[in-house]
Image 1 (spheres, one colour):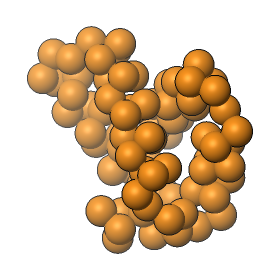
Image 2 (cartoon, rainbow, N blue to C red; image 1 turned 135 degrees about the vertical axis):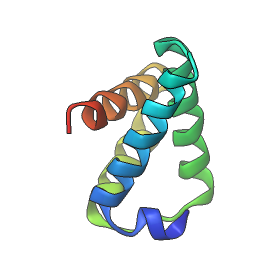
Image 3 (cartoon, one colour; image 1 turned 180 degrees about the horizontal axis):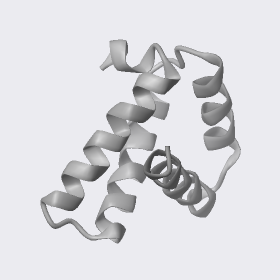
Amino acid sequence: MSSVLTNFSTWKQFLSDKVEHAKEMGMTEETIANLAYEIGSFLDEKVDPKNEQERVLKQLWDVGDESEKKTIANLMIKLVQHS
């Protein structure tokens, strides 16, 4: 996982692939959003940011309440779907 996190473009492509795979498996948008939130929480607790973009996301995550963190997770999904 750490090699995926080294470059933000690589991370976005990795996330995009996983979102697409989840859709192909029949997961709902809500389920995907909940998983994105859980992944964000895991990354916040266990992974040091590897680049400037990840540091900004971590800072936003750290100051956000639960609702705002869910919004960040949803926006990351939207970002990778439109890249």
